[in-house]
Image 1 (cartoon, helix red, strand yellow):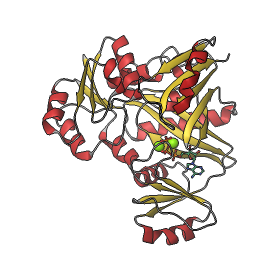
Image 2 (image 1 turned 45 degrees about the vertical axis):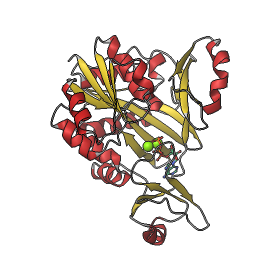
Image 3 (image 1 turned 30 degrees about the horizontal axis):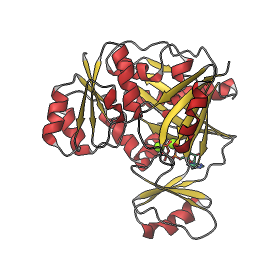
Length: 341
Ligand code: ATP
Ligand code: MG
Ligand code: MG
């Protein structure tokens, strides 16, 4: 494999490109909007997912297609799939594009999720609340990220999300963790150590490793992640978000791609999640994901960018900036990995 195609030119696509170029590969990025990854890729196509000619030219120039963003329209995927292999596979995309499908799949393979109900329209909300109870969280089935498309339902009247949704029972978790897991083309599975995640306003703020939880919990988390990638015949890196509860682990959601909560691996492992993903989708052997340092990853969101000069001066700190331009509130602009032990 010489050329990797990446759907999506955001920071994840950018970091995949950097890892791929270290392995002697080159990347062609396809991005409908602005592509911060453009500065590190071999080629960039800026065209909508409806542009059939652009999709064909993209596919013709690459050996394998991967993605940093799971919400690529089905029609584009159908065309691309007829022209080049897509890894991770279409089933992983279909399952994770839709929260309802995703939860049903997880339950089917024996994993616990929050209790949930389908809420196709506003008229179905009252019945769903009667079934699931309060407090609960209404989430759009598709397209949500960073807490967007979500409505918390407390005691008062409930707002509608504006799109087909799922209602989830509120989980009183003691912690949130995630496992970044990789599965190679040969079926080999490797997981990074689970990280402890702290969110603010629905956006990931920090990931800490080690996560400080008992070995029985972290082992269970890794086994859950391995079960998911195996069930999907998955090739690539996946992020699995979990809630820790007294009743055991509950899967919150899965992301069929490299994941923000895996950025710590850049400072904590010989082979980070981006290289691991490239290795998997390129059919290379998986690398050693053992952790050699304690790390705290902190996202730089919006005005956090003002702290960059000071962060650059801190010892044992990696600063990653995405080259995105305007630092709007809530926008992920970069992250730092602090080596803490
Ligand atoms: P991401 O950016 O991780 O893709 P998202 O928009 O898909 O986020 P979720 O991960 O579903 O959103 O939810 C965001 C956060 O809201 C979770 O990390 C968790 O803190 C909280 N949350 C979500 N669902 C529940 C739940 N059922 N019970 C309690 N808290 C929840
Ligand atoms: Mg999500
Ligand atoms: Mg999430």
